[in-house]
Length: 118
Image (cartoon, rainbow, N blue to C red; front, side, top):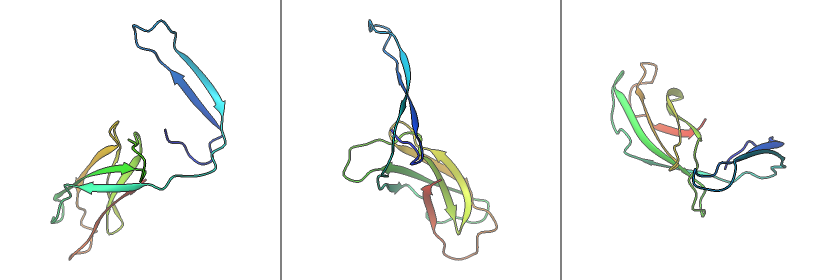
């Protein structure tokens, strides 16, 4: 589960399967979030070379180091030289694919693709 540091209430929902004898329920609970976990973004299958208007693509996985976690719904942004190229949210496996065209505003020469939490 993830939540902004300034949240004071969270909605908690229980939805049993259709064969369970229980009813679904939703509650709002007060919370005090005092700390934020450090995250790491693992990159795979990133485009290595591209020209203007060509597609760049990478796969990213967000994780909390030392914790077996899959972070769902984390917004990510793919940039090149400060130019936003693509955005995506992590799926239930904590992964996202970011794909977009390299804009002409990116300076020529060697550059770096970056993925960050948006």
